[in-house]
Amino acid sequence: MQRKKILIIAAKILRTPWLSSILFGCLAIAILLPSYSTFFVMPLFVDQLADDTKDHASRVAIHLLSGLSLSDGQLTKGSFSKKAIRDIRRSIEDFKLEKINAFSRSGEVLYSTDEHDIGKINKNAYFTEIVAKGKQYLQIVEKNMKTAENRLADRDLAEVYIPVMHKNVFGGAFEIYYDITERKHKLDKLLRHSSIVLYTTTTIFLLSVAIMLFKITESIVRREEAEKKLAESHSHLERLVAEQIHEITVTQRTSVEALVILAEYYDPDTGKHLVRIRQYVELLATWLKGHSPYSGYISGKADYVNEVKFASILHDIGKVAIKREILTRPGKLTAEEFDLVKKHTLVAGEVLGKANAVFVDSFGKDSYLALARDIALYHHEKWNGSGYPYGLKGESIPLSARIVALADVYDALVSTRPYKSPLSHNEAINIIMKEKGEHFDPYVVEAFLAQSDRFYEISHHLA
Image (cartoon, rainbow, N blue to C red; front, top):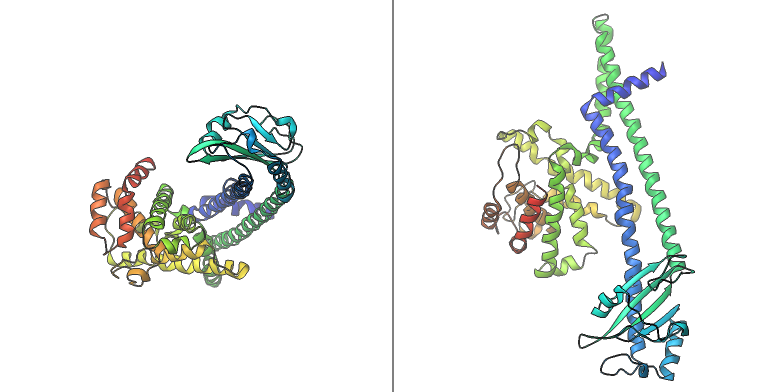
C-alpha cells in the first residue's frame, strides 16, 4: 500500500507542470553547482598559486640581477663573478628554491646551481616563442611527470622562466624551480574539503526539496481523492475539503522559496537572455572601471566586475511571482497587469536580501547576493527619478542596478519578445542616447557607446 502511494505521488509530480519544474530545476541546480565549483572555482585557486609563484620569481630575478654585471643589457658568462655565484647559492637557501639556471639570449645555460646543466642549449618552443619575446613562462609539474626540459620530477615543482629585458631587447633569462609539494598538498586538501562541503550541501538541498515536494503532492492527491468522494458524503467531506484547503495554503507558502530558486527556469526565453546580460554587464563594468569617475569605487571593491556580472543573472528572479501568461502575452498589458509585473522587483529584493542575511550570519560579510539584491530591486529605477519601485534618482540608485538597467533595456530592444518585434542595433543606440540623463546614468551610456560594437556582436552571436 505504501509503495502504491509513493508511485501515485511520483506520477502526480511528473504530470503536474509546476511540480515537475521544481523537481527538474532543483536537479539542474544540484548538477550545475558542483560543475561550477569544478570548472571555475577550483581553477581559480590553481591560477592564484601560479600568479603568486610568478610574482615571487620576478622578485628573485630582480634580486639576482642586482648582483650581476651585464654586457649591453645581456647575460654573459662574464656576468657571473665568484661573488655573484655565492649570492645565487645563498638565494637558493634564502628563498627556499630548488634550482636556478641562467640563460644567454641564444638559450645557452651560462650558469646553473646544477653543474650538469651548464652549456646546454634550450631550443624548446616555449623559450624561443615566449620567453625570448619578453614574456614569463610557468609550468606546474606534478611528481613523476616531465618538466619543460623533459626531466622526470621527483616532487611537485613550479618551473618559472623570467626574461631579462633591457630597453625592450631580450638579454637572457632566469629559470627558477620551486618545490611546491607542501603548498600543492594544502591546496588539494582545501579543494577536497570544499568539494565534500558542496556535495553534502547539494545532497541535503535535494533531500529537502524531495520531502517538500512529497508533502505538497501528498496534500494535492488527498484533496483530489476527497473531491471524488464528495457526492457520497457531502456534509462530511466539506469539513475535509476545508482542512485540505488550509493545509494546501500553508504548504504553498512553503513552496514559494523553492520557486524563487527556479526563477531562471520559469521563463523559457531567459536562457540566452541571461547569458547576453552577463556579457553586456561585464563590458560596461570593465569600461567604467578604467574610464569613468566610478573607477575608484569599482577598483576599491574586491572583484567587483566579476561579482556584478554573475549577480546580474538574478535581476528578474522576482518574475516567479508573476503569472506566466502575463509575462508571455503578445498583446499590451493592462494597467493592473503592469502593476503586478512591477512587483517582481520587490519580491526579488526581499528574497535575495534574506538569502544574503543567511550568508552574513554564517560568514560575517556580504556575499554577491547583496549586489544581486540591489540589482533585482532597483534595475527598473531611472536616473531622473521616474522609475520604480521607489522612484530613486541619480546616484541614489546603486551603480550595479544602473549598469544592469541599460544592459536589460538594450537586450529587450534588439530581441524578439511576445509583444514586440526586434529593433535594429542602430535603432537601439538612438533610443538609449535619447535616454541619456533621463532613464540612464550618463556615464553608463558613455560606456555603452564605447562598447556598442561588442554589444552588436554578442546580440547576434547569442541570438
